[in-house]
Length: 242
Image (cartoon, rainbow, N blue to C red; front, top):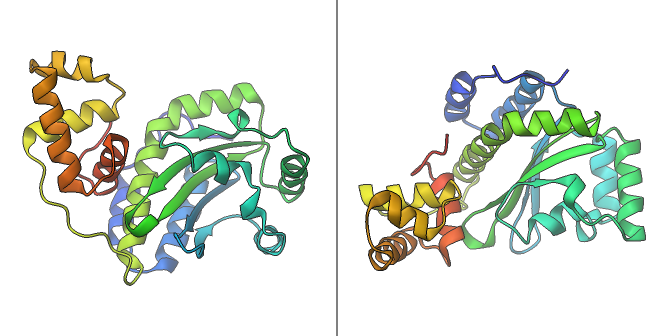
C-alpha cells in the first residue's frame, strides 16, 4: 500500500547526511521504497560523456536488459526529463512510437510498474540524473500519491543527488559563494513557482532590482540561466522548498 501523508523525512535525511559510501545510498533507497510503499525507487546518473551510474531497486534482470538493448537511447522517461527542470509523471510523456511501446511492454513485464514519477537533476560538468519512483496501481491512486508526496520526492531527489556528487571522486561540485538573504528570498520564491512580477510584489522591490538579484545569484551559482540557478540552489541546500 502506498504511504499516506504522515510520512516524515527527518530521520531519512539525517541518515542520508551520514551516508559514507555508495552502498549506504543503496540501503537508503531501499529504505525509502519500503517507507513510502512503492514498488521501486531508482537514482540514475548519466555523465556528459555517456557514462552511467545508478542505484535502486529495479530487478537485476531488467537492468541488464536495459543496458543490453541500449534502452537509454529511446527511454521516454530519460528523453522527456532531459528537456525539463520540472518533475514529470510518466503518463504525460510521449509513448506513441513503436520503440517506446516495446520498451514500456518490457518494463511492465519486468515489474517496473504502470505508473511512475521522475525528478530531473543537473549538476556540474554536464551531469544529468533522474530520481524516479514507480508502482502498480490505478491512475486515481497514483494521482493521490503524487499530490501528497510531490514536495517530499523533489526534496529527497535533490539531497540524494548532492550526496551522490560528494561521494563520487572527482565529481563534487565547487563550493558556491554564499547567497545574500535577499538572493535566497528571490530564488526561493521563483522555485515555488512565483512569476517575476509576483516575486517583486511580494518582496516590495522593483523588477529592475529583482533582475539584479537574480543575475547576482546566477553568477554565484555558476548557472547558465534562472532555472539552472534554482536547481543548483536546491541541490546545494541553499534553499529549501516546503
